[in-house]
Length: 388
Ligand SMILES: Cc1cc2nc3c(=O)[nH]c(=O)nc-3n(C[C@H](O)[C@H](O)[C@H](O)COP(=O)(O)O)c2cc1C
Image 1 (cartoon, helix red, strand yellow):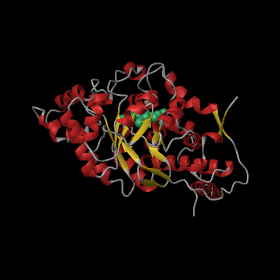
Image 2: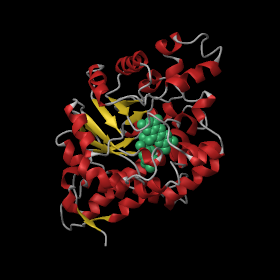
Image 3: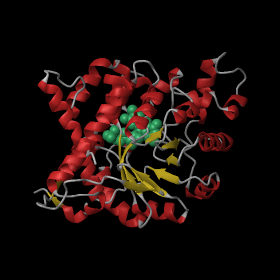
Image 4: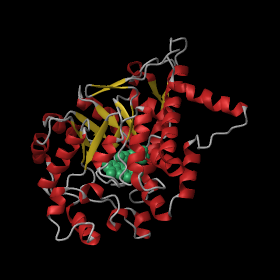
């Protein structure tokens, strides 16, 4: 059986004929490469975060606090990276987190489809955003056999919310991920300095503009009057009035697995589990929403404990395979990456995303091989020590 770490062999063997990797291997090179090719506005939107970005930096730095205990002669010649998520056996625990402007990160402007193609090629599931350049049905069709999850920003319109859920069900998504930390937009100085917000330019709104309920509220179709349609979007996008009392309604909308994203407080985990969710998604939106918060990794163990048997997806700050391993050891069932694959999209489209995922998987796999962890179950909190 091949191991994901074998990706490095391919790179070294290419090197024998003088061929260097066309795409960046380290996160730093990837980030630099993306900045070079992205417009100032897109770069600001993707790389930036809330406030002075302290939380965003802390997300990344918090991984430094943990070190993996290496175990020798542990029989890890073959690694089994499979993970079970909501009854689906995934080849690995890696996932792509929803990135609302991934459509624009692709030079052709079809990054949602390119993401789905990268998911199909690698088996890494994609959680796809409500904010897409191409309709969710087209994106689902490009996923092949790899599961996709539809991320829902619940609009301030129950009928529209229900319509999105119906469409996601019909398109074959494997679950609905409701994001709760963006009912109101965060304070983002980089974007504010450029006075730039992509969706207000009518971008990434394909799911709204193709929706029969959304269209029924318009005087003119989005094709005829895109500005009016965009303004309608702006007034319905977020629903800050949502409370835990609405969870029963959200739950009633679908028999698909329902997950809540943006959960960090164990008390919220208990409310979510009591309300019948199938999974909890621990994340602080990569530090893009509220600054001055806790690094997501710091709250992960509490979230996992409160969730009990309910699976926990984690994201925010994952940059390397070693980070993936640490999040798994702290109890995550699956680990999401955000910005790294957005940068991969910018530098190389679907092939760039595929490369980023293969690099992350190779490093995850090799870390487990070298440190003596043959499978995901062997990674536990006991595998980690605090770095002094
Ligand atoms: C440019 C950008 C757009 C995002 N759009 C969404 C979105 O539409 N829905 C959502 O739930 N999260 C969104 N997120 C948050 C990601 O799903 C994820 O929580 C975050 O990127 C993780 O942090 P990281 O990028 O540092 O890995 C977005 C993140 C970025 C960077």
